[in-house]
Image (cartoon, rainbow, N blue to C red):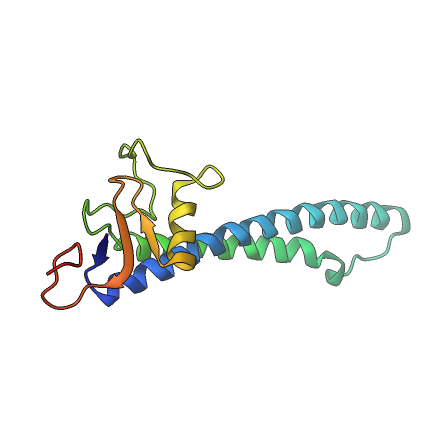
Length: 153
């Protein structure tokens, strides 16, 4: 089992994994709120046309919150790409938290249809991951001074 080369790489893996999961949650919540906001918004305008009363901005909070969450997820996407792009597998030097068109290992497994989601959850929950490109397991620990990549002297 391999270990990471520095604490900077370990932090990049942890931050990149957290942001990857956070982006998916934020996009899901944002889409639901945006859909509810659009449905509510059409009812507000229908009511406005019938009663000729000005719609209030407080009645549209779901719409604006959904748009705000989707904009935030776009910003987080770029931050995640920046952080996770420099977090590379110690063996094949491919970033497992960033989409690459490289061929996956034939034994690579997915979680909910995503290789990156499996790696992100493994990094955060198990403190180890298996690279989907080379198939080698890596412990989320920094190897000590004088240790080889496999953690043995």
